[in-house]
Length: 359
Ligand SMILES: *Cc1c(COP(=O)(O)O)cnc(C)c1O
Image 1 (cartoon, rainbow, N blue to C red):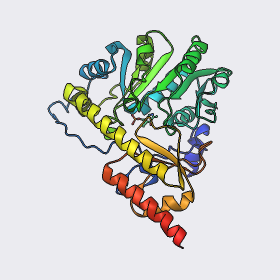
Image 2 (cartoon, rainbow, N blue to C red):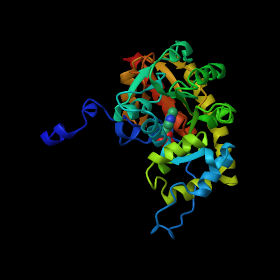
Image 3 (cartoon, rainbow, N blue to C red):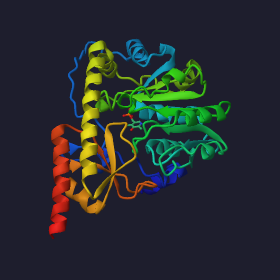
Image 4 (cartoon, protein in one colour):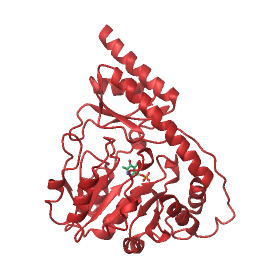
């Protein structure tokens, strides 16, 4: 690093590695099954007539549209640049650097820790148990925690959380910390949302996104659902114009009756494709399905992991390597794709193991 930058950069950033997003890891490829994106491409209308104006900080039709979808009041909704911005805002708003901590339960979504680290906020890890459930005793035994991140369904294990366990955690931290339920994949998991509990638990926050079931990862639109007091605190920190007008317009279309009907239908299709993929993976002797399938991906353990990954990449099929995460040795995660993409993935896997046993 150049001397000036080396001397100026915040000390806590020197060792930090940026999030290895699917797009940063691979640029080419044909079958992108590594970022839990939707295979569907939906049509939207554009209106350029107000692009000379700044947008509203929180465009009302968008907030009302999501409130209606999530069945909460508009005052309980904050729109952000993806759920990722919600994660960062929560940390910047509620954690004092070098003093407070966030608590995470690995293996889980990587951005909680990375966002905390960029803000110089400590990360306390209380790993999931051997069957990927929450270690409630461990979680409730920590000090200086301001935020507890719980991902449900969990990325990458696809597991749900035990409702009673989450209630105990919410109660334990009622006076001291917010408990953040990341529901990025909730549409794939029937009726499992925590949104209806927002009234009961003042310290509950729910994160949502249009990136997964709504097939709008490129739009960068997410939502934080919480008490009006929490939303007002986050509004002190958020950028003045966080939601570009075209984003709000497209998101509103995704949230109208037609859009919601389409999502429902696509989720049904993706859930049966996931079921099919799970069955196919389970049939293959070198592969074992890991965790549960409550989202739009399947996690599996395999033999000859590095060689298999390289073999898939060479043919343009990209899936994600989770083998470095605790408890996930030799595990790969494949996003549910189109029937053609899944067939190509399975064919390549078969070819790979056939070639190996022949040689
Ligand atoms: C994909 C994902 C997000 C990020 O969603 P964006 O809205 O695209 O920022 C958040 N949490 C989890 C668990 C995810 O898998």
